[in-house]
Image 1 (cartoon, one colour):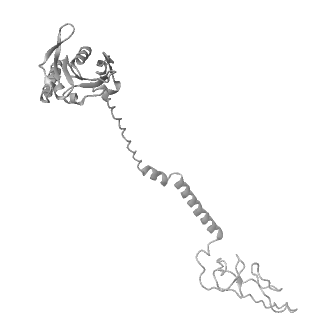
Image 2 (image 1 turned 180 degrees about the vertical axis):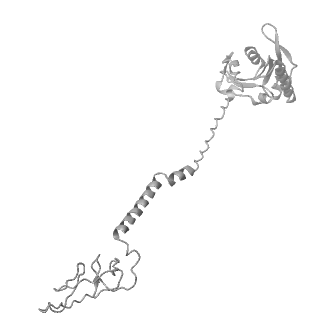
Image 3 (image 1 turned 60 degrees about the vertical axis):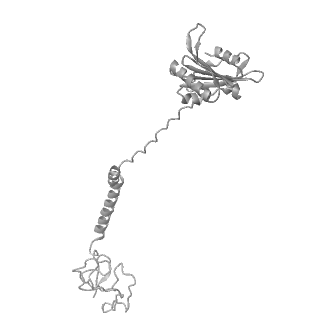
Length: 281
């Protein structure tokens, strides 16, 4: 006669220690006592079939056949002997531990240490500012720009062409600290070129007159000997030289020094050039 599991009601073979369905320990289970009435299947055993006839008047119990089912004789799988409440508690503890570990990680555990270990980004080097180039001096103002005021707007019937003012590179290469030249014209189309150069002292200006007069002489000009140049009070302020170019079809030249200035006037006749010499400083 079979015994039944007190946990799930499944039939358990006599001598079995565990329920073949739920794994509940059934060691020491006893066979239920027979009643005088028909035997009823315990709860939880669907499909139970009864065959035979009801109890006879003599009181003999009818035959009961249990439905076929698995009768495992191998030991139950691990954990089948552990009560369900214990398994549920263990699972809840494991889930709680996982949630706590996630909260610690997100709240600054490993992330904070990694953030502290990351070296700060090196600042990008700032680009050095490039200063603008210095302004280029205007050629019409000379190297120092101080000779424009020495040119009068007109000399006699001649008027200065302001657009013709420009620096003389030859005087600069000869050692002048400043230079400026410009052209004067009259109503008849005659022109006079005036050329000025500033030197460091009067002796250098006079030396420039001598050098230029010598060059004119080599080119075929008729050059007079240097003469003293005096101001209105008779004080000598420099020297002057005339260079006649008529014999070689060249204009005439008056070359002079006035203190530290070198002055050169080029035109068609000496009377006009003398007037320029008296008008300029």
